[in-house]
Image (cartoon, each protein chain N blue to C red):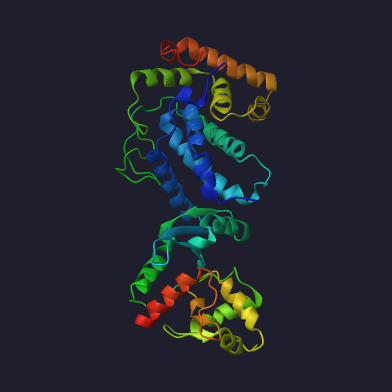
Length: 199
Length: 178
């Protein structure tokens, strides 16, 4: 017996499946089942993955972090109900676009900080106090959070920032004034620092 | 580990739609697909990591299709042309919105013959054919869905295919599956 699935017609066409997928996305949102919505946007520092829970923006990821792996991690840590759904990220995408265009200096977005805990969370909460175009050293940030000896831990908190660009870990530099490491790579860090210095 | 649901849709969306088409015809297949994936999304966090995702989706589609078939039997005179009213999910005027005939494009005469032959099968035969020949489920799992023995599931699929061969000549003439 040599009957296969194709006996019953060709694979469903891409347009039909895309339309059904969109309908699923809309019903999922309406039914409160869209635990993690995501999209990708283009930026001067490469494609950025944006993900949000109903609470707010939960993740910004550089291409170097491997977007598929980031989504797998979100699926494990937050919820596997993950769907591509650009609509929930509209405001974040718009503000990022304004930021990269030099028309925005601070972000006004609800954030979901549930991916960070403990000292890292504390450091990341304080990072937005470093204003646009300013910089601090890792040591200064350690002092800022009341733990001046925790320089290395501040470095780790910056390196594991789940919301880069929006939470400005790129404004934290090494004590000698060199940029230091960055989750999006040193070139991305320089691009952001130059963008803010030019404004 | 459990992958993002987006990947589940991408990997299994086509197979589930084809299963729904065989179970219900193009007319109701999209409706069943939507209900299947929404129910799957709801239950997905509780699905064991070791589960066969496609078999699980087919199980849900099986139940959703039974709902549709029951609803049809409650309405003994189904309307052929469903009026183009907006549904809760479809947008009015959108091509191929819920329940609008021709959602898969206008089938040619040969396809129509095939779907008529499929629709004429007894429910169990049509289900066994869909789950084995379209979804690729083993007969043991199909038996669990349909009730009865593995042999009975195998027989239902074989009888279904035999009946299709007899009543649908298109594929034979082309020398397709033999």
